[in-house]
Length: 181
Ligand code: PRP
Ligand code: MN
Ligand code: MG
Image (cartoon, rainbow, N blue to C red; front, side, top):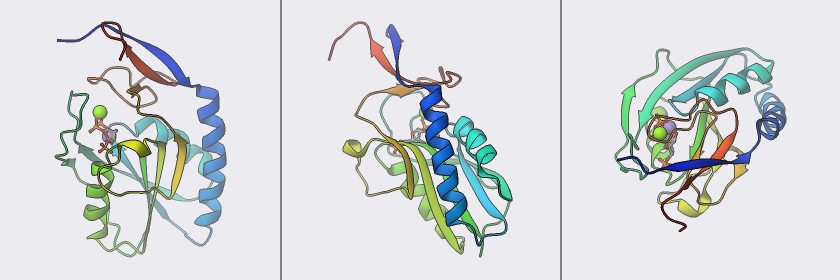
């Protein structure tokens, strides 16, 4: 039951790359005292962002992943966040940066922070490429944010609609053709 839609560009690949370069510089300065930063991507949505971000970081990092999902194939958050794959490495006493594609209701990041804080990292910071502040249901603010965006259904650069469109090199909005609301 897929409704017909098309995608309109919201943030170009060039604008994303420029923003990531600036953020990477800030992160490197913030973690200047850290010798082996653990960078954790939240699968699946963050896989493109983390790949570009770590290549701009120019410092020693360990890359790990946590698979956590709430949306499944729906457009609405289920608000039930499930951890599908846990970290491979340990984070106790270590400096950690969590990399997320988008913060919407906040449930995913709230659950992630609880899960990771229980392992007693020395420092736990977060970066989200996109933030939809108006949609927040539980309080969460990322340490670094790429872009504030309005409440539109976005895809691309790792973000899916029913598992499609993750491979678009830009961020686009889904425009449904059977309604104009
Ligand atoms: C999406 C997105 C974020 C989360 C944000 O993940 O990648 O992780 O939802 O929404 P929230 O702030 O309302 O929790 P999704 O559950 O679709 O899994 P995916 O990353 O595998 O696509
Ligand atoms: Mn996700
Ligand atoms: Mg998804």
